Each structure stands twice: as structure tokens, then as C-alpha cells.
Amino acid sequence: QVQLVESGGGLVQAGGSLRLSCAASRSIYAINAMDWYRQAPGKQRELVATITSGGRINYADSVKGRFTISRDNAKNTVYLQMNTLKPEDTAVYYCHVLRSLHPYEYWGQGTQVTVSS
Image (cartoon, rainbow, N blue to C red; front, side, top):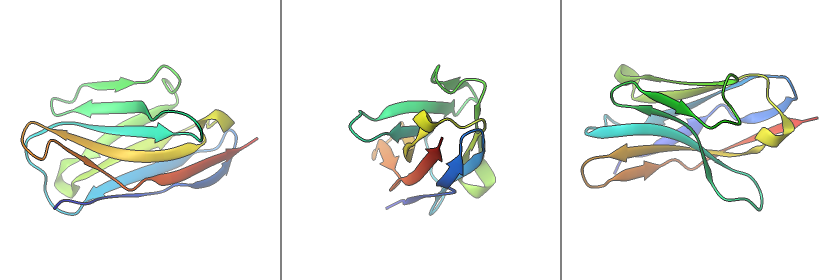
């Protein structure tokens, strides 16, 4: 079973930056996309950023221009650089991998990001 381990979360002041990392315990094959989701208290989990196997990238409107998703295939790692953080970015951030073969997805355990005003 593959495990996804997120790191890099923490407490930061508004306007600050954090870089999240998500490392897979071993190589993952048949990846369609790697994503970052987040879930704030009392809210539904939402898609923040996606990078497909072909390198196509998409962002939620709320983070465009501030967040950057990237990946290092050799390290089985996906990153989320978060700049100009706002209090509304406060959430638990989850790494997600979508595959074309079973198991069709993996989820990380989540990392807390808290942005103070």
C-alpha cells in the first residue's frame, strides 16, 4: 500500500509563505493527476491545484497567482508553494493522487495550515 505523507504546514501570518510537500512511500505508476485539496472547518473539501501526468496545471480561482503546484517525479513528490497567504487559506491540506488503475486514488493524512490576521 502506498502512503502519501504531507509536510510543511504550520502557522504563518497573513502575507507570508509556506511550502507543502507530499512524498509517496514508493513509486506510483499509472498516475493521471496529482492534486492538493483543502478543507476548512465546517466546509466541504475543495480542490486547490492539479497537475496532470502531461504537465497541465489548474488552480482554484481563489488561489490563482498566489499558489504554485509542482512535482519531482524522481522523488515521487508533489509540492504546493503558497505565497501571499490569507486567513481564508486556513485549512487542512491534503495530497491526492488519481490513477488509471486500481487503486484509483490515494490520499494523504493532511497537514494543517493556519494563517493569522
